Length: 226
Image 1: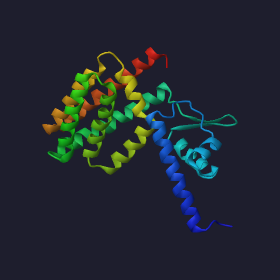
Image 2: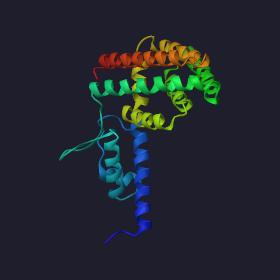
Image 3: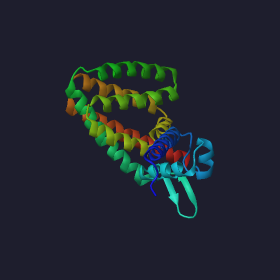
Image 4: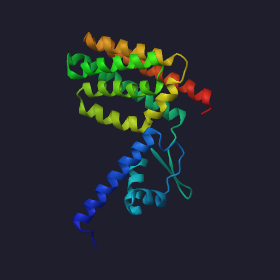
């Protein structure tokens, strides 16, 4: 016998809420890589039955954020070196295309917002505030993707960034000596080309920036023995 429509909708809504909260906890690093995800414990934490928890975990497994090991348990996924490289290759393509599209759009609100973000980033670099700068890195890249004004690109990009759990990776990348200043300088070059409406140049320099970030991340992981 099927559940009443209202109850099914309530269950679906509950599953979506749990999935979103777990997603943010993983992306932010509140739930570190390899953390065990017990259905029973999560059920108590969220105050819901195990059914929406189970469905939420299935969704996050599809997104690449959760790993299910049969007869062992469910854990926060840890991308392999190869997976990270593949994800960064896609990040380079998406962000390069976004920078190009934004440059061709001309003087749109996102360009003004990028200028303000860069002023704040410059201050964070002067203060040696890596935590604040990491937040502004996310803002910078996010504004470029939004400014591209392409919903398909943005949708795929969001899924990719969730799989990368980039918020925790960027801190490893920025831990490399001198990377904070290098990253800020690379952002300035991208923005200058966008302001000049040079789509080809903006795409090329953005792609170079993503490759440099990937290289810094790999070096940081080597130093930490990850």
